[in-house]
Amino acid sequence: MVWIIILAVLAALILLVFFVPYGVDASYEDSVFRLGIKAGPIRIGLFPKKPLTEKQKARKAKKQAKKDAKKQAKEEKKAREAGQEKLDETEKIRKKPDLDFETVMALLKMGAHAIRRFFRSFTVDLFRLHYTVATRDPYNTAMLYAGACAAVEALPAMCGDVIRVRRRDIRIGSDFLSDESEFSGRITLTLQLFRLVHMAVAFGVEFLKWKIKHRGVKSADAKERKDDNGREQDQ
Image 1 (tube, rainbow, N blue to C red):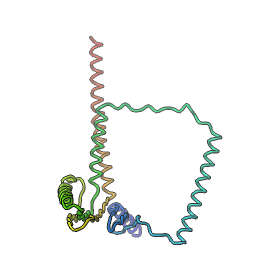
Image 2: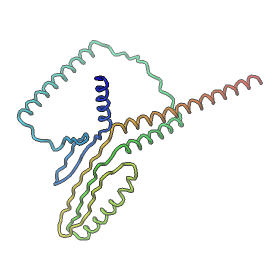
Image 3: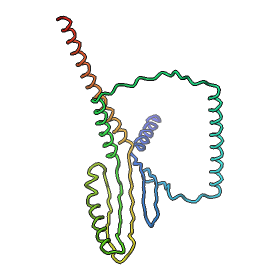
Image 4: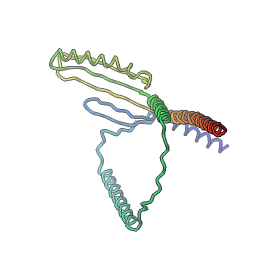
């Protein structure tokens, strides 16, 4: 009974690790850029950094001193080993595999499929864009406002179905009484590990299928050349 509970807990932890969304959260508000990483509901801020306390400063300095000492000891050890050992200049050079045009094109095609799957693995949980256009010239304000609206209208068509967007909050406005534009935005981009595993498995299956097919074609060509040589010898 205990083993069943342990296995169930381990399975739940593995599922949690693979299905919890991991990602980044970047925002620009009130002229301050903020960047953080997140795992599920937990968010850890990376920038701007909070000021360190005196204890944290002393701890950081102590860790840096230890790191520098280890680095120096490692460099001295490498220098001693380099002086004692002689490099073998007659290393065996591995023969590079011959890549024909068909192989290169197949690899490029599989790579393009993998890149497409990679981008489709991401999810935009939140995309927020608030932009108020304002300049000293009302004509420039109107032109910039029209260009911003056109860009926002074209953005979903450019993304297509490559990246999933769950929430959008886009507001474009104009202010003819102000001289400075106002901008604020936020994007939360997440990725689940099981999607990466699925992408790797799909790439492996596609590569194995191509390998088996390519090997069958090569063996058939070799057999045909052998039969042709045998016929020529008989004649």
